[in-house]
Image 1 (cartoon, rainbow, N blue to C red):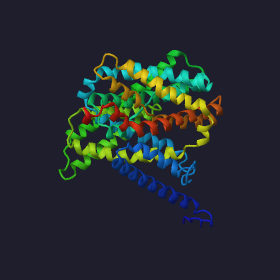
Image 2 (cartoon, helix red, strand yellow):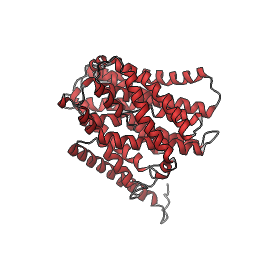
Image 3 (tube, rainbow, N blue to C red):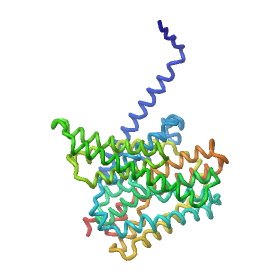
Length: 421
């Protein structure tokens, strides 16, 4: 006979912790819904309210979220959430719109990304005195603008389709490339034995793995949706769940092979499925949007709640100077060079220069790297970890608050919204 031990009086603490976490998740979801309501009411991007809500309930506010409450599960939660967000962004991209803006898109994700990477790295090196390793790591992370912050802005600022598509594709592609590039640089930084060809090989491995897995998963989902008969009463629900499962499976399968390959896989699967003829397409898109809203609010509020102002204040005036250079010099330079010879007006270029907020990818990856620099990586670099985390979060906080908060007004002044054309 199996005898179960009687728990001591203090053993139920784990149950209370679980209940606290459940209550916390419920509170975050509730705050997310409230943020979305306020965003719709006042025509301000929802990500702005997510940031304020997160700071308000974090250690710098009401302290409802202790810094260690999520523990090691945070990176997993963020990873899956980012996969769903990127999948939704690529799924709703229209190939025709990309083709119309292809010249600007192609330059923005190549020439523009290189300008952002090199310019940011040099700025961090010169103004903050960071080592080249840390400077390049920050530069790689801050290439990403990302759909998590671009989409909420475009939802309330109806600009011309070519402009919106260029910003959306830039955000999605640069999210992917920035994450992969940052992982490669971090591995090179901690391993110290890679040749230049080794960097390229690490990058290609992750990119190729993600693309292959994404294509395979998209193919399987397409086959199940179009070639397998489903009961008519449950077919729409089955289609929605199959597509969502495809996003998560693509991410998990690729990420289990190479770190950050999962983001590439999710993006590839989303774009492939979005380009194919699928039954119940509108229902699928609406469902994915709703799920994206939930994970976006959860992740943004949680990460904002983990902000420590001491990390930001430690950078001083030099940190603010870095942000100013990124916003006023590097971003406009990248936009104007990338869109030279393209049929964008000067006002549209100025608006695109203004809209370059950073989001989930830099925040989550920087947090992960900072933890590893402090505890794991040989050689460990605690000071580098503080500089990395402080710089990335300062740029995110300022660009989101300023650019998301003022995007609609700036667009109105420049006359770039569709209603004013």
